[in-house]
Length: 181
Image 1: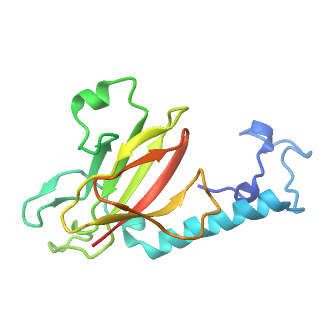
Image 2 (image 1 turned 30 degrees about the horizontal axis):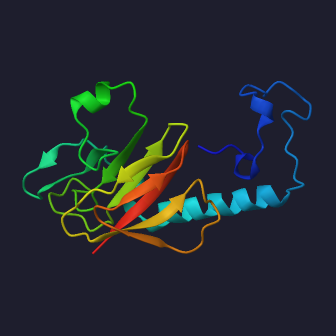
């Protein structure tokens, strides 16, 4: 969720309840500097990705249940080692980095048929340091293409990795990758 001004760095100096303050904490300063313009461009790219990939705006809840007819799960949680997360991974308080694999072939509507959306991997790293992350193997895909990386918000060209490659995910960052054949 984005509040007016968030897209260019309006912070309210950390005050999340500034509605009753009539001062510079709650005012919107429309004098946008270079950092603000860069953040606006990054938010524009993110909203463009949401429009580009229907899987990011599905009307059905993701369940993680395996659909035998289609041979896929709509969502899988991926450990940094590249495999599906186990109960031990979930219970490990040291787990700070994992991925959310949204399979675009999963049923998108109430009609029981495969979808044709892109398959996306969203990696979240809450750790303070770099975490090596092995990109999962997915049937029908040979490479992962980085769509965005919050550590490199101004990246304009796609960066490609082979399925099974290990990438470094910078501390306290997130990345979105799309699967390609």
